[in-house]
Length: 180
Image (cartoon, rainbow, N blue to C red; front, top):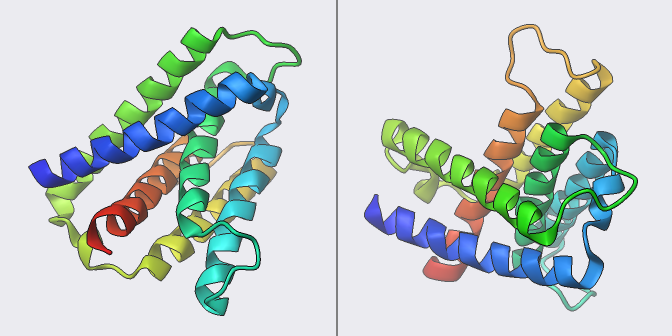
């Protein structure tokens, strides 16, 4: 499990670096996105991964790896949106935004470590295509919860689905970066 924790930290570092650089380029323009728009952005990334997996070729010079990074970063943005709500203006400093980013990535890692303990690192034996399919399923669940105005009867909420998508994407990136 130490290996998994170290590999997870590597993925955090890569994703956080990209998030911080994009924040310098674009600011926090994403704060204007409503929850359904955030869900659609994640869907676009996951659907592209599935399309590339099925077609085996990309006409745009970007592979699957950047899409998983994008899913992670959009999920963290989504978690921030759930906490703070949408904003029409820059209501967070870059430092506050990065602290929220780190907070949610740390929560996702804690969740992964807890689940990893119980499931015995079963994710290492899963196919890459399963991560994609599970992410797409989580997106469908989120869309249904959004259609229900955020209410669930017995199921986990949107935040738990974002956390799971972060962790499935981290697993995929670990496989890409360390096992290929």
